[in-house]
Length: 271
Image (cartoon, rainbow, N blue to C red):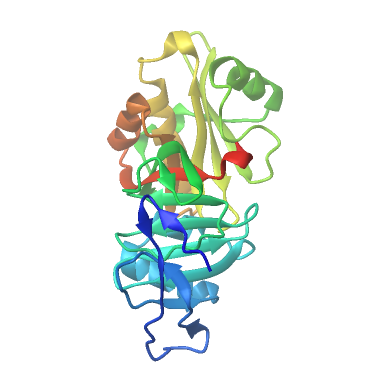
């Protein structure tokens, strides 16, 4: 069998067994990086979440990705974690310095990647950051309103943020929120979304171009955090492009903490 090569480092087939802690945990003969590591595997969703909390802390990006309907397998070392999801032809999400790798993934999201432009047959195509914060009541909650006119939201997104992640009509959206300026013009929107994993994210925050830099996004994010708290949402997450430093400053100012910096890899045929 040909050994796949990850950024010039050949993979070896390593299997160092530990006594399973549960019946769902087993040692598999899978390709991992050429360093020799001891690792475990589980197909039990609850155990995968427990491993995520142990290695990465509560409310990590891994927890947000762990939707039971998409979860296939989780593998771990003492300090690293790999998730296999059913998305597409197979997706891997990797955390830590020595995560087990599967050469059959067609898409791979790597937190803190050091592989460079290629990961075996996969090619780098995107970089983005994931932030979280605990939700709590805020005095700024009254600065936003719940929006019910999907056409108005869609028009604003098409004009001012055409690459937004979610759009009116997406089934995971709980509510759209908006902020108006002194003339009652809608100048900023954002969506509170419940992912399949059960975790909530703030998505598609967009500000009218000629009103940017006036604090509207800051006020909207604070308002959505407040609204999430009123809905008994414990944590909020969000993703933002790695080079969108202005948005990152807004999120940090509103209490979000960087949890993972992802590099996405995919097969060129999927581009």
